[in-house]
Image (cartoon, rainbow over all chains, first blue to last red; front, side):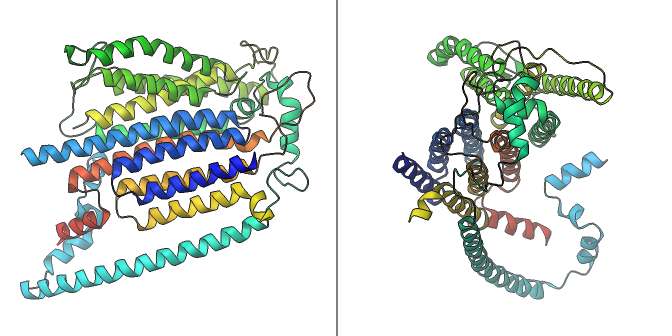
Length: 84
Length: 292
Length: 121
């Protein structure tokens, strides 16, 4: 069990580092989503199902959608500028 | 007037930031060659400042890591019961008494919506304030977009997505409602259920297609629902506080822990918080994709 | 090694906090800064919730008729509201970033600062 937790926490750190180091914004946001999902599993290991549900719905779901909506808006603004 | 200056400040009008000082600087502007030299010197200064800032940031961060790591070694062991300062009388009281005092089987819901309900009201106000700020930043502009409510997409271009959403949305909404209404008997609750409901609404909004004038839930309506729920929360908890402080015997029956009709005020408060969270989520999404 | 293993959650949260803090300070892109802030948030939540765990404890939902040890529900309830508030703060920060992009056509903070300084002169 401890081995599984250590693997999970190592994956958490790797995901955080990859989010930060990735050069493009969209992959970075998607890795952040994976980070939040792993965090949700970590909450289960800490016996906090309330937090796991909240993190899966809010961290992995809503926050990622908001980031992607922002990136899409920025790209649309960029293309409109190129056309004009 | 204040509204006007705030908007200018948000748009980066520097004069308003500096006030009188910039007017003085404008009149005392130096002659062109001097200005060029000064700008070059300024660039060099900026580059040196960037390098100094990077080094300073790394050093600060390393010192912080060392300090935190040393502190961690002195903390009580993970999962220990003996000499763990977080396990004090308050926690013991919650675990022993909350089921009979509040009627909620979920201890977290009992703490969030019964013992610390006023704190949660503050959180709901923070969420509402963030939504209001997003609306202010993206919706109230010089050329406002008129968003119309819509149910189904007009163009048949994205029929596959629309039919999928039409099949899926009732189940998503049902799951979210289950989670909100069972917040006091099982894990979940208003915050998570509201976020799931907001996610379902986002899905519906995506299926409406590329028409930027139409949306499933306009920000006006969402804010109206949020304000009603905030007011309801405040009134319910205010009455409960007032009655409790004056020794009046006014409270909803707590019921048996584990039943849907138990927990007194926890169920209505969960519904209020769920609506507020869903409204925040869907408003932010709509404005990020639709605003000018 | 034994000490490291027994403090695994706390050590992870310290590492995550420093990663997020470093991003917040050093990365010039605004979206990356916001992601760094989110990582810092989750690191703090991990630390808080780790202080509430008890060996062999059950999830804090009442089990009628059983005499069992539950984990500490207080950090869980504090973190639960914190997660939602961090989401709404992220929405606010993204709206500010969009606003800055509309004005300066860039998400790079250095460029924005430079443009703002030039606009001043």
